[in-house]
Each structure stands twice: as structure tokens, then as C-alpha cells.
Length: 212
Image (tube, rainbow, N blue to C red; front, side, top):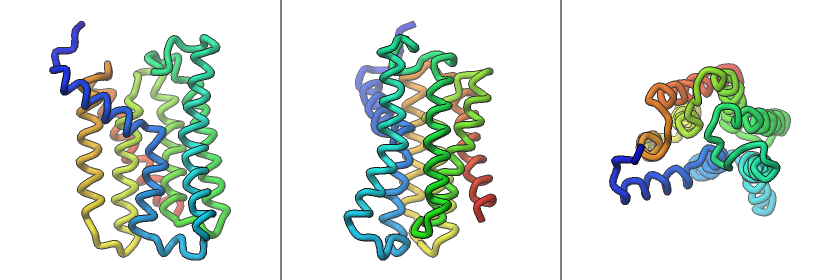
């Protein structure tokens, strides 16, 4: 079935989907923390700080993406876009491992802000639930990731004396744009988007109260 949306709308929807791909969300979150709570990183040299950002990108974006690429080259999936529920099983397990590893590191190092701890624990839980829900529907990973980012930003603003709603409003708009983009260019149903949104919100809340 041909997409009824104008080509320009579809182009921007694709751009938004790529720029705010779920694998990039952890990197965006640590960059956000550097902006709003820089005092939590006091005492860390610039080199170590850059290494920390790189490690988040390496473990949560590059390695999972490389694993998906290998799956595709080994013909374990028909494309790198993981269009079927079956093709998503192994990537779910891979990101679960990396998210747990990042949570383990953030929990055991004293120079990690608590926001990183509950965020990584939350995304680990959401990927675990996503794997289970994947048996019944192709839940939207974009909706899950952006809603997790939204709730993590809200909880960070609640936990720390930030007093600036700019980032909250920006993340709300971002979440709306991403979910709208997925409605335009993906084959997700509204239920799959809604379920993904709920999983991201609830798991971050649960992780926050668990970590505290």
C-alpha cells in the first residue's frame, strides 16, 4: 500500500527517525546531564569525561548496531531495519546485556550521578519487557526509547534543583515528533506505539524508585 503522506513529510519523518534512533538515546541523555548537572562530574578530567561519553556511545549504540549489521550479513535477518518480530529477538538480548553492563558500571562507580543509574536500569527493564511483549506485537522501539528519555528528564528535574523547564518542554516536543514520524513512515499500529510509550514511562519510574 502506497504511503499517502507527501514526500516532504516522509523525508522529514525519516530524518527524525534516524537522528533520534533508540540506540542514540543513552548518548543524548548523558549529554543532557552534562548540561543541567555539570557539578555531578566535577573532579573528572576532560579526557575522562570525553571517554565516558564515548563509552556510552560505544556500548549502547555502536556495538548493538554492529551486531545488527553482522546479523544482516550472516543472513540472520532480511534487512538491518529488523522488520519482523522474529528478527528483533537477538538484538533485544544484545541491548539487554549492554544496558545491564552500563547499569552495573554506573552503580559501582562513585563518580556516577544517580540519574545515570536509574536511567540505565530503566532501559534494561524496558528492553526486557520489550522482549516479552515482542512475542505478541512489534512494539515500537522509538516510542519506548523517547518516552524513557522524557521520563528520565522529568525525574532528573524532580531529583535535582535544576529549576529549568526548557529541557522538559523540548523533550515533550521531541517525543511527539518522533512518535508522529513513526506513524508516518513505519508499519507500526497505534497500539504498538502506545504500548511502547507506556513501557518507557513506567520502567523509568520503577527504576527511579528502585535505585533510590
